[in-house]
Image 1 (spheres, rainbow, N blue to C red):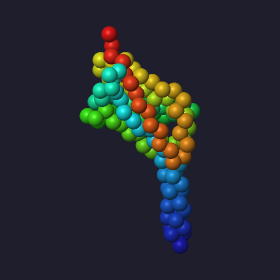
Image 2 (cartoon, one colour; image 1 turned 120 degrees about the vertical axis):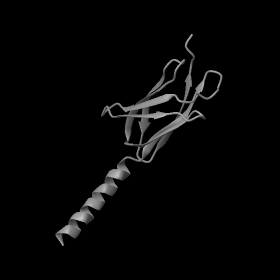
Image 3 (tube, rainbow, N blue to C red; image 1 turned 90 degrees about the vertical axis):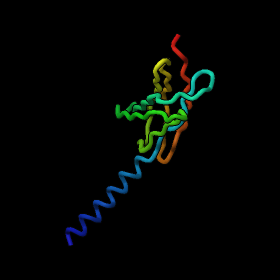
Image 4 (cartoon, rainbow, N blue to C red; image 1 turned 60 degrees about the horizontal axis):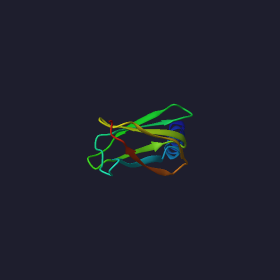
Length: 108
């Protein structure tokens, strides 16, 4: 009986923990002419906790970072031959996905 109670409680706690981290940031990285930038590295950091996540853009310049907790984030995009592009103050609520389109300028 205790074992059944333990498993039931563990399942409930697991579902609550998963439900809290279902927000995300996704988007596109382009250059100043609008052409996509493949293999750019996207960094997002929760400004309250310091927890960071990374992603790399696809051949189409797309990226997606999921399972983020609610809070304030700063995001940056880096690619060889381009200046780093960043966006502070991305606010995520529970169950929200924010779209960020980064336009990277080439290094001169």
